[in-house]
Amino acid sequence: MSWTDDRVETLKKMWGEGQSASQIAKELGGVTRNAVIGKVHRLGLSNRATSGGSAKAEAKPKAAAKAAPKAKAEPKTESAEPKTEAAAPPRSTLPARKQIIPAGQPLPPQPSANEISPEALAKVNEVEKKAKKISLMELTERTCKWPVGDPATEKFWFCGLPVQQGKPYCEAHVGVAFQPMSARRDRRR
DNA sequence: CCCTGATTCGC
DNA sequence: GCGAATCAGG
Image (tube, rainbow, N blue to C red; front, top):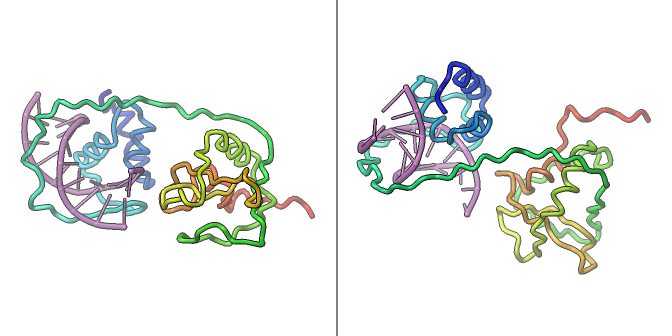
């Protein structure tokens, strides 16, 4: 893949929007985030809204001089994002009697938990199929802490999929936990 | 461990 | 110019 004018445009646009290099790379396809970052620098675009991960304008006096003699290739297998449409409201209800989620992360005031976008629910439903189904003890900072099932039962587990960085849940569950302000249409009451 | 961008340097 | 390897940090 080469940096066609078109691709560069997308790059500029996304970078400007604060998208991460990896996201941009994924979008463009055929390139790694390193490629994106490298291009960004060459283009002169550099710092921007330092969002998300990090941004160090720090100058590293010492860094390399070891251009790897390793002939290691990265199998960048492009994976499309399957948009699965399913429907079946999962009842991941956590009894109020006990607080099981180890709160280590901010649990924002969950709005109306009753009005969740069908899409989000569908996504969750889908995700729960491939969930790791881990136990409480297996929870780590990087595992989705979304509870599934009844804690009083043995059919209870935590999603366990990789969390969305900075969030307590995986992407799908973040979707239902943190409803976008935009999706809050009232349901006529 | 996941992620982020920054830098170097062989190609 | 390109980008993998590597670094540095959250």
